[in-house]
Length: 169
Image 1 (cartoon, rainbow, N blue to C red):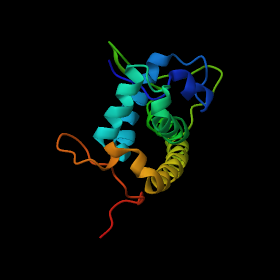
Image 2 (image 1 turned 45 degrees about the vertical axis):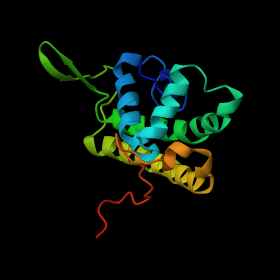
Image 3 (image 1 turned 90 degrees about the vertical axis):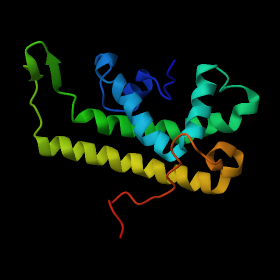
Image 4 (image 1 turned 180 degrees about the horizontal axis):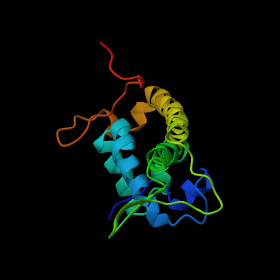
């Protein structure tokens, strides 16, 4: 069973994704954003620890309070903004037997690709703000999360870099 760190309702409530949007249209973007972005910053060991606590329904146990704080205060906002930024580029597209289609409503205007890119960039900027908060928190509290610093032979090490602007030479 795959643990999602946020629900589709969390994403709807804290984004511009409307309540009438079918969750099946965007749930995969939550999962992908979690796998790519959140696991990147947590590292595989801490990511798996939080996943296990969610699947086993023990995240709320008193002994796991630090993990619940990490999830609620840092990971949830990061994931909400990363999932949005990943979803917007695909939101108006649909694939069916006839091919790939772009959905158009009779009572709305389709934004330009530049407007969509601006929305993606703005969402990504907000996600990166929450990443910086997370990294600052982990700098000061990493002893509370032994999985964050454990030697990792089977997965990703946590990315502790705040540079979001591409390559640094």
